[in-house]
Length: 182
Length: 347
Length: 107
Image (cartoon, rainbow over all chains, first blue to last red):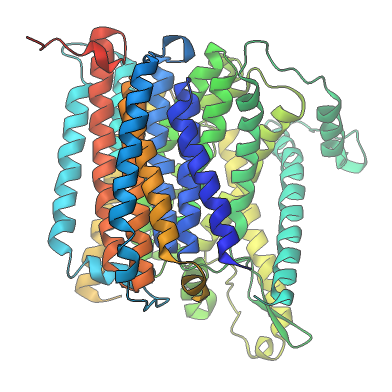
């Protein structure tokens, strides 16, 4: 099978879902579209032969972060009626700005394709290779990211806590904010 | 990829899906029989001998019931919810090894759909995605009870997934590999009795508790507890969409039993599997292995049902306290002990 | 391992895709006012970068890029947790998640 077809199909799905995240009036629909985007990005990872990233992407983004988003949306009961809208002048300005960024990015990065030395090996995406790299060369950043998580968890729990109020629902929110970090 | 491999895998997937669906159907019957046994009743016994056609009758009833979509429901998401629940329940079985290799006409056929080197992570990923079926369905119903069920389901599943992952890490540390096939093969020592449960009893208990919570089975069935929330997330569902949710629960039960059997109970390994006779009859060995695997799965399924009809449901705060203050610290302690043991005494 | 993809599919395709994704994310950040959707758009931008890292990493046969993806995921998870906690606080105070209401410090 030609990977070009698969790539085109996946890229089409990715961009369509990403656009829907941005233009949908209902935040819940945005979340679901974003989950689909993450799924298609995971499929891209599989196509790139980086299976470990694919599944970690699913677990971390689709399985934890987006559940948290959906949970908060449901908890705050936000839907189409409460969704703030911006005027069309904002739309034009945003479109122009992001269009400019797109042009600049493409113009800059397209040179990058010539710099790539093609020496793909099948082991680059394996758990074993990544693990060895992570626990030798990147050991310090790895430990630091653990501290970052701890700080984020403490911060989320502290922020979620209302002073002198023991509301059960708020406890749940804290619990979940913590759950995302572990 | 060669054509015969695709054909072989397709046939395996078809058989596996058929078996999964068939087992899920008959689990409803099994559940009622076990409940009847535990409550000293007879259970369903009218349709066919011993009532074995009862699931078919139930399924027929489900199909012909009126299909209702509430007026204020979000129609597409309302339909999407049960679909996600069903799909995520079915695709987990892809990485589970059901037995050794079959040799048919000179071809070695692996009784596992995909031996990926991230098998356990794949299962964790699919499990963590499975909550969307409940959340989306519960939200789309536009019903307070459904929403409560959905919110409870999501917080419960996130909380217990953590302890589950931490319990798994200890096993992964021991095996040094994420592939389920490798983990099962590691347990074939001691004449097929070197099961992980003997090394990880605490991890097994944590994992089992979390599996109960992840499949929303009693005593963790708070997302659908009928005395508080009517039907929980599937209050508004009827006909086959409801059937999908119930079916997905039974499939999840089946699959999580299979995962537990693989990880902790040695999968398809059985005592005496290294007998000389088997080395000359590999196909017989494989068939017996499949049988053993299914026996272990059945045992776990019976445990699931036994617990459901024995223990009362947790209160919500008890559930959260058990998850966050009980299981997670225990799982971390288990991990540390395993690590320390491996450091001091080797593997 | 099917390495054929790297010969048949030029990496420039991935570069274009990721640029488009990043631009869509930026458009969302500029256009939307709901703080939750803003956070989601930021996740989208981070993911575009992740994908590009992974693409370069596997085209060059170098695992370092994939390690960076992990660190980006770490940051994204921490950011989402703290961001959502702040957002819940904000909702408690203003009964809305509209970011343009957060101008109390304006002189």
